[in-house]
Image 1 (cartoon, rainbow, N blue to C red):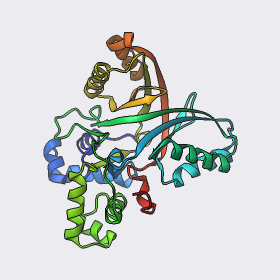
Image 2 (image 1 turned 180 degrees about the horizontal axis):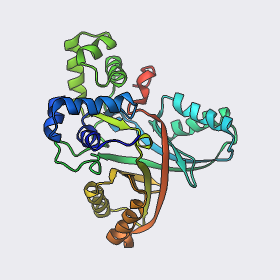
Image 3 (image 1 turned 180 degrees about the vertical axis):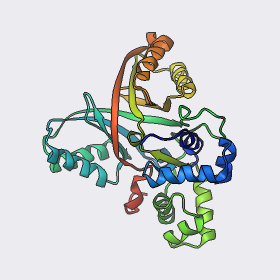
Length: 327
């Protein structure tokens, strides 16, 4: 099911601000309120969009380890074991099914590399010998851009960046309960979230504001099922000859301005940058590739394109159903 022009405009307006009011959306999109409300309701009803909070895990002392995996087996039962492990692990924040040289990519939130090694040891016990190749990079920062390719009208928020924090915050039991309630009921009124957390409304509100002020809770965004909407999704993995601040800024600016680039990730590891691309026409990927070569070709060692087929799990706060140990 392809989205309509009205739905596209509404999505572009709310993708980084899932908690916006209908009057605000309608005003920005120059639509009647009932039209904006129906467009958003219809997208949610067909499971094209769902909201989730953006939690700056760096401020909690966690690191985002991105791993691209190649599997030995084409056996469906083996793959299901791997996917089940990814989905059930509280350390898994994001999983995508890929086509090409890699089969899956997984984003793991861990305090150190020993926890990552333990994660894959546990996977090996469940599906021994299935994972044969791992390519890993640490995500230093992640910027999510508004989906300007859907509609490039002016908006009050153009991007959200999750990055390292100067101070490491520790969550207590109440903070964890608050984040869990927000994760489970992202668009519910705060009074409903407070009841879900078993807390008084004023206490809950105070805790939410404190999490925002501490740079832990960055906002609420929409995750969109692009495949269902007829939109093609790609990852461009860029390896630089030398990753410099100048090159990082150059590529960030390029990504920010390009309507089809919805994410810029600065990494350390097997690649230095990830560009998240969404387009109605897959041929546009070649144009983006050529533009990067024209812009910074002499500073780049390689650019690898990976096609994203689907996202079985996406959770900005993967510890939502976990205990509070370690916080």
